[in-house]
Image (tube, rainbow, N blue to C red; front, top):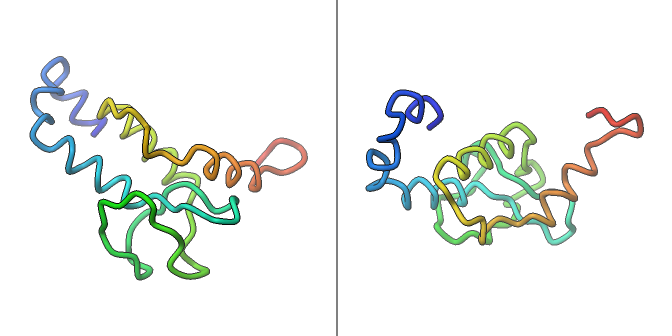
Length: 108
């Protein structure tokens, strides 16, 4: 998406208009929500058994189905490019997940 934004410039919104909702739903289908609070964020794919669903309340499918900090970063950036309102974004779970990864010296 960022490459398309650079290529199309001011016409990006016009170019992406017909696909905006579909792309947004797909990104949210990669969101991992956790009942315990420390596994939130976005997964990279549905390869571990999850399936595409426009339901944004997808929970972990198994112990290996976790979010990844890089995937979470890219998902948030893509949602920003798509001018999403972030109403479906689970901020609390994502922040808890990132906080649980941080070491005492502030690094990851």
